[in-house]
Amino acid sequence: MKASGFPYLAVVLAICGCGGGLSGSERDHFEQASRALSSLQQGLALANGIFDLQSMLDPSKSAAENAGLVLGRANANLGGCGSATQPQPQQVSIAFGSAPGCAFGAGTQVSGTVNVTIDPYVTGAGFFLMGAAVNGTGLDGILNLRTTTTPAFYVISGNLQTANPFVMVGGSRIALTDAASSMTLDGDINAQGERGHTFFKAAGVTWNKGACFPNGGSIRLIEGFEQFQTSVQSLDVEVTFSSDSASTGKVAVTARGSDATVESMVPYGSCPP
Image 1 (tube, rainbow, N blue to C red):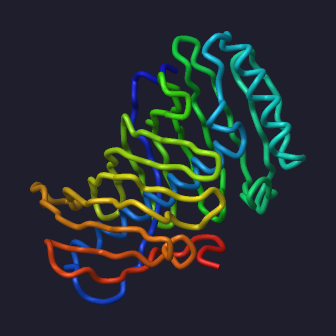
Image 2: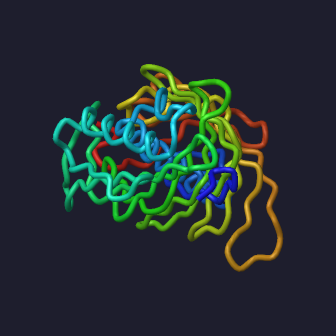
């Protein structure tokens, strides 16, 4: 699979808003966008915990050699949580077992199976989740990760989905900056679920590794396309994260330029504590 194809990416996150400021339709799209963002965060947390996105691949090595690097890093990072093997020269498979699975790193709780396939044509990898659950969020699908000329900068695309409620999130050319203790996300995302489609843009959305929610940056809801309707709804809703958001899930939401109201991210797993 070539990472340069940039297929759709599915993700999940949820928000349960309380208070005024949002119309019924705006709140529906707000909740769907938030579900998408949270799931993407969990998928990336798992990928980073397994093989360190900062130093995931070596452009000077072959696909099989990079798969060997991923295998060694997974065995070192997982600390006995899950079983990592290399069934094919360009593939690493990690079995975490049935729920509740096990925990590793910064407390990432995971079950199910993850396969990592190295792209032989570009310096990238497909990160496949099959029946996986990460910190209480069920995830299936793929994240495509690719290095660029800047070592700590990655481009993501893929197709992640979750149930209860079902949401698929599509996106392409989403920039991920990975630092020692945090990750930052920028780019356009399309969430598809029971509310139809929600299009939003992430700008400098940053979270500390192991945290429940982002602690900086914002997402802006741009368009909504509701189920069984033929017209696209223009949206102007901005969600801003602060240091308080990381542990409480509370965010500032501004709709149509009005005064900000406080909304809450819907809990998942043990978040918020």
